[in-house]
Length: 296
Image 1 (cartoon, rainbow, N blue to C red):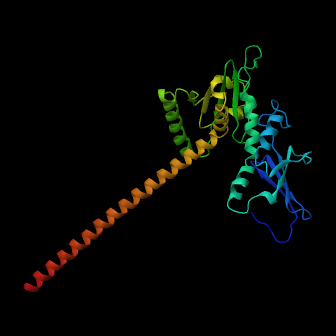
Image 2 (cartoon, one colour; image 1 turned 120 degrees about the vertical axis):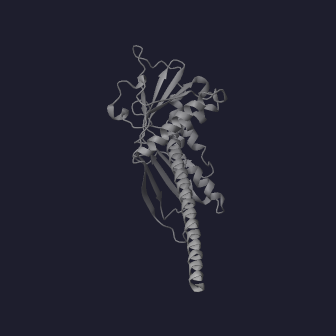
Image 3 (cartoon, helix red, strand yellow; image 1 turned 135 degrees about the vertical axis):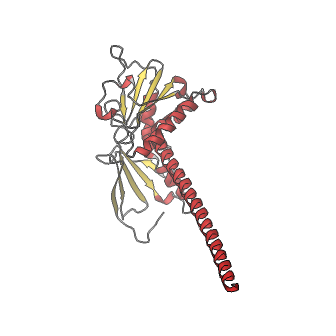
């Protein structure tokens, strides 16, 4: 945390994922107070309101209550404005923990919206027996779908990659994940499936949403998966599933590259050792010929 000797005027706009906007304001006349305004599009347009729910507001209030207060009204064009008391942020190493907690405000808001959707597992959403998928966009380029059905919710993730090698690694990972998930050890976890083609629940959705090269991964979430403390874990796993898959693919590629590099180094070492032995044998052979010639 940087505290300049001379108060500075700060007025910055920051963007995340191309749709989340932050505005940071600090006035030289009151340098110990900063205002952080946030504009976040709803996780699902048409299902969730643009305004933050009272439950979401209460969750945000729980972020560092000694440092953070909610300013009323919010700055124009933003859903939420936080007043940060910089004087109460520790000057020691603990300030990192405080700032890290404040930076989670976006995930807190989106998690709260996701909880509102999952809490309605038993809601009547059907129109003439057809359950319409709800399109969610935690990341603009990685939407996923939630389909409410009696006593359960199905979450479907269309998977896309730019490189063909990523698709191969991800497909092997999905197949292994399905095998492990169907074992008795993980019987309490939500059942999962993978398919190269869109599942029947997504029939009628836009073509661009169903155009993938990595297939479709689905979770079958029942009411017991959203009860009590399990709700937080389920929400976290769903919102970060795409990130988890990409992290696994990246780590696997790095592991393969390290193994290939090590293998290449071993081969080069073997070849170098062989060449050295051949050079020694050649010199010894030349030495014998020279000795025989001298004796003759």
